[in-house]
Length: 47
Image 1: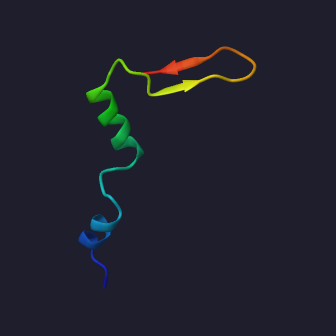
Image 2 (image 1 turned 135 degrees about the horizontal axis):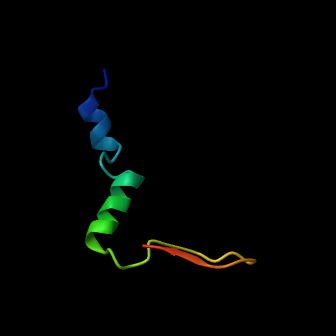
């Protein structure tokens, strides 16, 4: 039977998108996280 510990060991627990965004915000708060440059319209940047 697979235990929760087995799942966490192989699923990179704690490295999901919300975790990575929080880590980025804590370590590089003034660096752009996402830059959106559509062909038509204004560009946007999120830090």
